[in-house]
Image: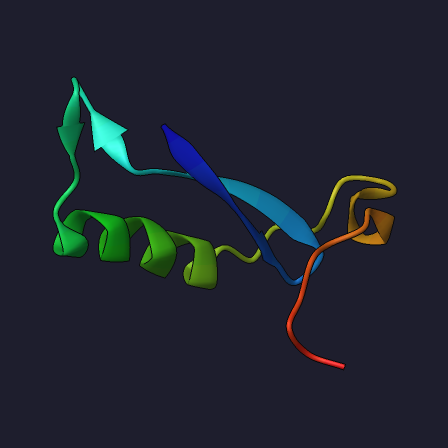
Length: 56
C-alpha cells in the first residue's frame, strides 16, 4: 500500500492508498514535497544501504 523513496541517504514511506482508496496525484505530491523539505540526517548506516537506481 506504499512505496519506498530513497532521498539524500534516507528512506521514506510514501502511501499510495488510504482507507482502500488510491490517493490523488496531489496527495502523493504533498508527501514527496515533505520528503524534499526534510533536513534531518540519516540514521547511522542508513545512507549505506543499497538502493536501486537507473543512474550510473
